[in-house]
Length: 458
Image 1: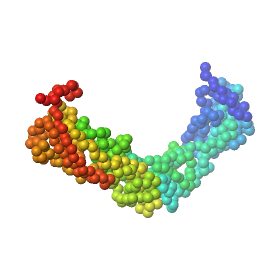
Image 2: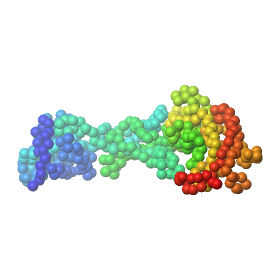
Image 3: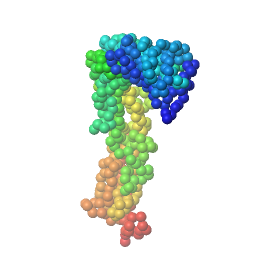
């Protein structure tokens, strides 16, 4: 037994619709009839698209052998349907006079089935030409199309107007960001956009970021009948711009607070929460990957977060910059096309450089246990660093020219004995502060395992 579902059709009297789709058959048509199944809310079993309804008859066969009645409706819906003449031979009823762009209700006993017949010929798509719009718009490609073919409308059983999707297709080449390239970059990509019906102008996003032709084809009905229409523009220059920017810190921003030890970096943190910056001099590489339309490049550097006042402008695509001054710096990339009519503004990079600091430890234990085996200063944002270390007789035992360097407690390849040494440090902060410090270095060598109780060497 066929399971039945029920659909209420407003004002039409349609009550029962079989769960198995009912259909019509046609004769006299030169091209095959195309079928679409609309949403259930339309109350329609099927929509039939005929190239032409001239000379075509429609038939319906009752599975129950009932007497068949036909009704026809237009834009007012099924509540205003009128009976139409038909003939019946056995279980099959035929409608000899078929009118296109109309809805039909077939009464099969106590059941009613609703269909829409579209006559395609009055709406036939014809494409004549395509060309880019004369006025450039950034972020969108605009193509003007000349041709004919109005949207194909139909009406639900309740008289609601809807439009068939003819699938007019616009194909073109653009550039898309591809993370899978090595290195990642923009890549030419064939893309397409589909539209419901013919328009005099199509607005396309993403736009063509590279030189491309635009090909307009349609519609899906002509394609099904192997009569598809097509027009193509001449080659169109890139109409928009796009870019991606990246920042890579080339100097080590890792840090430990307090005095230096043997666990890692001896830089004092700048409080930048793992972001860009830290101790000066801080070298950062900024890179811009751009689409074909970008001709002009500019990196803007400022202390002003609003970028109303720009301190420096660098007219290059990539920038390596060394930050020396304490404080917060802001940097962004701007790329534009040849005449400056389209512009890309990149993200803002915030670089925090800490004020200069110099802290000097007074002891270390170069015994090879991996803990505090090297004497180093703790610092931030220093330049022109010089450190001299002397023994008790005033002999120089080490000379350091960078705060990154340390003394391992060796002279001539041999570790010195425990005792007191003397240092002199001179340095200049990137903020202009001058440092001149001196003091004792106590060398104490312990025996035993690191982390255990130890005693001084005897």
